[in-house]
Amino acid sequence: MKEYFGDIFKGIWTVLVGMRVTFNHLFTPAVTIQYPDVRLKLPERARNRLYVNMDDCIGCDQCSAACPVSCIRIETVKSVAGDDLGTTSTGQKKRLWVTTFDIDIAKCCYCALCVYPCPTECIKMTDVYEFSEYDRKNLIYNYVTLSDTEIADVKAKAAVAEKEAAEGEFDCLEAGLINRLGDYFFGQEGDTIEEVTGNLLKEKGLTLAVAESLTGGLIADRITDVAGASAYFMTGAVVYSNESKTDLLGVPASVIREKGAVSPEVASLMAQGVRERGKTDLGLAVTGTAGPAGGTPLKPVGTVYFSLATSCGNQVEGKLFSGQRRTIKLASSTYALDMVRRLLKAG
Image (cartoon, rainbow, N blue to C red; front, side, top):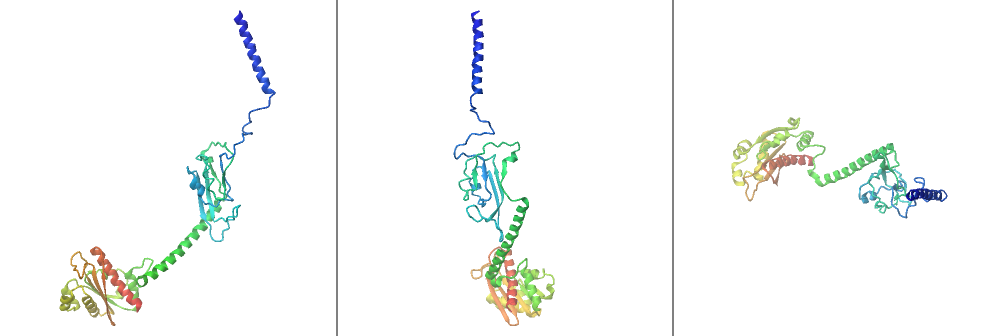
């Protein structure tokens, strides 16, 4: 019986204590905040959501470079002549259009490393610290103030200006290169040496005959690759052996024995012979050694002599080329055609 009444007392006492606590709270000022209408005051220099004042942004990209998690993405376009981007609040002139300034706040670790490098102090931490979203994309904040149309116009103007600047630089580079090349510059835009030389022959109304030893008909082949070559190219002779040089071009065998087939003397006589037999204005001849065998200490592989015979006399030039056999033949054919071109340009 004693325990029965003891339990009743404890129950009534517990109710009374609870009612006392309740009444105390009813008549005591609130000690909890009413979130989210009321929030705790943040400590000084608290790091929370980022904000960018685009009026002061100069597009320097220093904040993006400092970010350790790459949550900032910036794209800029260089302004063109006539653009007025204004100035920052500190008077610094803007030179770059900022076409993209995105901050992925879901990646941000609130380190504030992006804030300190900013030269215009346009990026800063705010006191906003609660910002949940249902869509992940909504956590990527776009601070750009330009419209899509304005961005498209800025990029289009910049592309035109960049193209014009590149063309101007190319023209200067081209002029400098042509000047450096001097007489060795023969054309551009896909011009070939055989086309340029052929056009000069046609313009001047001159005819050409070719005698080839080293190149084995390569020069004649390149000349006749150009349509209309029959207007100036009359004949060609491949005189590979010493005997053919004598029989077809009249080069004395004694000169070949004394000077050698690869010599300026033989080249000159070959040019003169093909010009006389072809009854042309110009006679071109090439003789040399393409290797890999046949070279000597005095005339190593790659030694080539060129001669161009005209009514005023013979011009002879010698060159030493390097490379494989085919390379030497191609280089020799190009040089021979250019020799004709240079003579025609000079006269």
